[in-house]
Image (cartoon, rainbow, N blue to C red):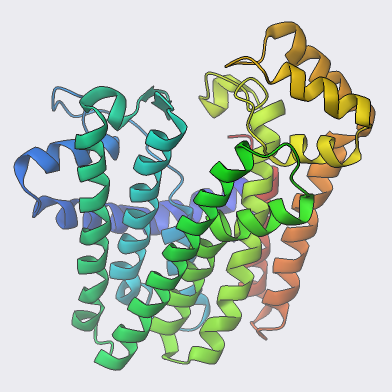
Length: 346
């Protein structure tokens, strides 16, 4: 492939995602009508009245990484489609629950599931999606994967979404703490975001060759890509263009302890930390205080620090990919994905 990292990822999306979308629609079609309506809304396929919508949905990077890993490991990526669809379902299950826990009323430019149908219905929808993910993953056996390998795939996915849930818990717990270190924060996002990226590349490689050692090596690369992706997300949550990110409030307004704020708490003075605690006394940080926090971040060089952290994680992913011994063209594909994750603007 040629072009910018964004163009190369767009090419991969065009190559893989139509088939992933078909698997997702088939997977959700078996759910009860009332639940199905909720899930189709959350996935961006319909509006609240059930009419089709042209919503773009998410980036689907987890299924993309799964299918890419399968192909790079020498396998037929179509055999990994059940795993790719399961990963996207697990990711969306987590988004439904995250929105409830964070009380977010919009996602991707429209109302969240719980804000339309209420918390009980949204919880049921999210839980259903997680069960459907397990059922979808089991269809790897129909792709020709031996039962023992299917069981290994199931154990892997279960372990990683347990890590993902642990990461979400830590993220919420950090909101109640006055101080969080950068090391603690990076460990948390390694769980909350990195774990499912790891599972994506592990599962793709496992389907290709049924070699757990190679699959773990791919998975380690995926985890670092996931951390790089999340650090870039933190950058966009403070300095991104809200017309592109579709987020109505910045992470500063929401008092979210993303990496820029964690860095401020660690690198700032005692006076800075005391003032920040006072500024966080209200439900939402006021406009003047947002400006002052941005000035503090600029004084401390936070923008450059966050960018360098994302780039370092991407470089680690590229180094891990290099150890896989892939042909040069396949290595460049992973390099493009890692670069996209730290350069994207939405």
